[in-house]
Image 1 (spheres, rainbow, N blue to C red):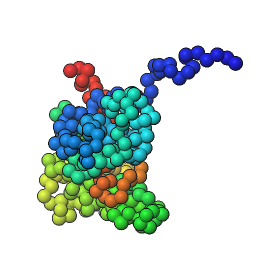
Image 2: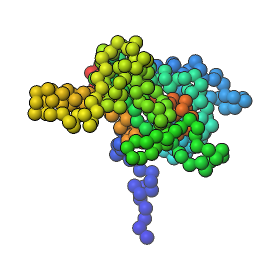
Image 3: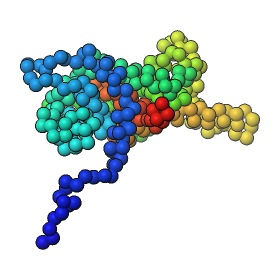
Image 4: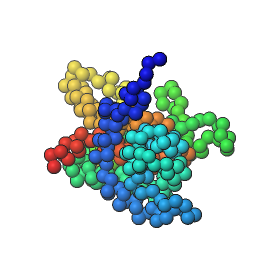
Length: 328
């Protein structure tokens, strides 16, 4: 039998920088930890409930909370990952050999703390304030859109019911059950500034006024928002609405005549601007793996979406932020 060497026992030091470690190293540098900790710390308990062990640092729990978002982990899965993955413990600032790690109840209580004080909305605002201060988020234009997020439709649960706050809707020839994430993004950078969560059957156009921040001069939307400028709730928004032409009407354009050619070119320009709104959806669904709601109820899932889009904003401009840090 061949004798095992130290190089084959598993104790050797790995030198390869994996994509996961590269990702965490980049996010560690671009997340405004000090500002976010200062936001949450006044609401965190000074001592553990029922005289238990001393509470973990706010930054440690916030880092664990972000790990959950980035890798789409439930509370029990996050607890196990802390034990199984030294890189996660290192990122959270926990001792590699530490046995006293946050359990799923601790992770759950921290999330409830964020929900109770509506801190997800403030996390998004704090991140965006940081990006705005660096000139990465402008306020001249907004693009609005929505995406469906699936929810479990099964009734095989304790209550024997589907989530009453989720609904079904038909898109094309397919029925979907869940919620909608409505977002308003910066027309220049594609960064999300506003998030609204509704049931899936809520029409996109009814939420358009909630997605404009009020300081933009132009708002861009797809054909599903036809008639938005005439709605009563949008009359106080002093912006020009640029809504896409319906596909059927666009197909009938005579592109050989001057007017038809101009209208077609205008639609292409509007489409290029609207494309920015698809980037955050891609990040949370493909990069972060968020394709199904994690919790029951709109409030919890909307708070989760706000955190996800705050993190997607940082991910989308991380290279520029790192270059700014290197130059600084």
